[in-house]
Structure formats: C-alpha cells, structure tokens
Image (tube, rainbow, N blue to C red; front, side):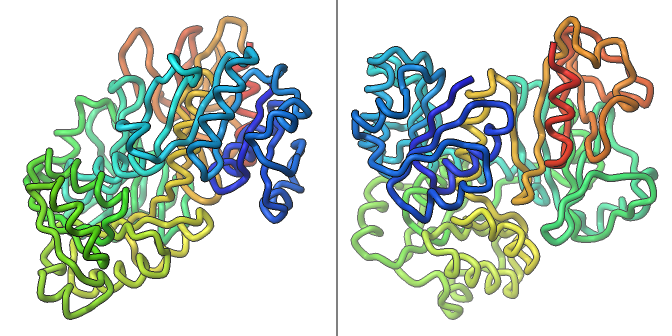
Length: 437
C-alpha cells in the first residue's frame, strides 16, 4: 500500500517505523530535526507544511491508499484529511485533541471526509483506566471484540507463583506471553524464573478473568485513586473513574484550571497545588491510594511525583511519559507502568491501517502483539505453529469458530484461525510471511 503520513513527531515516527518495511511510505514534516530522525528508514521524506496543497500534490496524495495526519495541530490534520478525501483517498485518519471536535477515543467522521479521528488524550485515559479490574493489574485491553483480554499484572509475594515459568498453573485458556522485569521485556522460555515485582503479560479468554483474580488472591473492589495533573488526560481520566464509582482526588497547579475542572466533575475532589510537593502528598494521603496516576505534561514532574508516592506507599503507580524512549527508564526506577500518548495513538492508528488486525506495542523496543488471520494457502496452514514460528516469537492465543484456544505444543493451524502472535522486532517480518496467502 501507499501510505502518506503528515507529522514526524512521536506518533508519525512510530507509525512510519512499523509500516515502512512492508509498504511504500511518505512522510511530511516542517521540522528538519524530525525529518532527520527518519533517515535510517526506507521512506520518502518531504520537508514542509502538511496542509499545503502544492506539497501534498508533489507527494502524489492522489495515489495514496491511506493518509494519516498526525501533526500536533488539529486543524492542519483535519484540513489534510479533507483534501485527501476530496482527491479520492479511500481512508483518512486524523489525530485530533480538541474536545470540540471529538468526545471518544476513536470516532468515525466520514461525513466530513475523515475515516477516523483518534484522540491521544482520550485513548491514553481509557488505556490507563483499564488497569483497575484487580489491584495488581497494570493493563487490561479487550481484543477480538471482547473475546480475549491482554492482561498485565505485578507479581507480589502473596500470589505464590514465583519460580520456574513451567511450574505456574494458570486458569483454563490463559497463557503467559511475556515477562517485563524493570523495563526489560522478554518472551518466556523454559528455565526462566518468575520473581516478585515482575510484570507478567497474559492472553486470556475474557471469561477466565474472574478465575485469574481468584488464583492471584485478588478481588474487584472500589478503589481510591489520585491523579496528578489536570490537563486533558487528567480530566478525561477523572471523568472515567468517576463513572466507575471510584473515590478520586485530582491535584492541579493552575487555579483557573482547577475551577474549570470543578465545574465539570462533581464527584472528584479538586486540589490546587503542586503534585511534587511532598507535604501536600502526605497530607492528602497519597501513600494510602490504591492507584496514583502522574499525568502532567512534563516527564520530569511525572517521574518525581511517581517516586515520591512510591516512597509513601502507594499500591500502584502509572505515569504518562511523553517520549517513548523514556518508558524503560521510568519502569526501571519503580514506576509500575509508563504509558506514552504517542504509543497508544500509534497502536490505534495501526489497527486501522493494517486491516483490522490488533497491533499492540509492549515496550520501547518495539515488541509487538499482532493477530493474523490464517488465509487459505498461507504457509502456516496445516502446520505445527510452534515449529514454524521463528525464534523470538510465540503464539499466545487462537480464535477458532468464535472460541479462544491456547495453542498446545503440536497445535496445527487451520484456514480461518485468528492467531495472536507475540514477537520481537527481528521476527515480525518473518511471522507476517507465514500468514501471507
């Protein structure tokens, strides 16, 4: 496919890095430094204003199959998509943050020529709010229209699952697909040990989540949450948690913004103050919180706040990180989960660009979970999946006839199977070739 991406910031860069190996990708950005970041990729790079009709014409926008408008300017993205749609581009995707334009993480706006609008802040807030099914959970994403759940949780001494990975007994239709240890993520192999504070990633039949919670001695309870940062992410997150019936406190430094939020959120306690003020955090009981979200627009502020509330005893800490390369750093020093708005937005875009497949990036090392449909005639059909998959990849779950199945050692793939594969970057292209018809 021919794909035109406007904007080479975090979102545009991540999308381009995922797509250029298999597609003809062109990227437009007016910042020379952003353009220079793409020099190691086999992409066509053009410097200039993405809303300039002449430049779009030079980029052969008429020949594009998909246009992704991912600059930091909502209006430029909307204009770019409208121009593209007018010129006959069949799919357009716009990154949009203004709440006057969008009120859902992903919204269909075909009536104005935009296939999808994607809001980074709403997408990120929804992702962070999904971590509350039980107390040790750090992530919980619905896949395959709710049939499968991608779950990440932190190992605690009470769980009694420490030891060799082959000894862990999981509920039916749950499969361990990755271990994240201090920001370093790897596919588990025989002989690996599960340790306290490890983050385990599982693919589970959605019906198995209660059994998983019971196995881990967890229960779903109303929780106390603190949010540091009253920007768009903090506001959307507080609104989401309010609807879940949680006890929410939000700390925001700007008094005018506090007043604005207070008018819209009746069930959240709004505190005007600095989220890195230790005395304020102690006074407001940050250490007794079940979850603390550090979501200001500043990475250093989020990191400092996270470390302070960790020392105070908060059960779970999730932090916003604006630069994807800092995800590992945050998790190495004790943040339970660092989430990049650029990464969650790029994942949302990729799910729509690649034709309905789920694409989830699980670390700044580009480890990915992708699901593939085994088409008739594909190399993998009729063969043992464990023997065919390349090194550094793992089949985590298969959906056959509408039912999730954990693939056993000699599991043979049938045409029509939907297979979720965890893969390191060096194996992704090899896996794709196995499923290509």
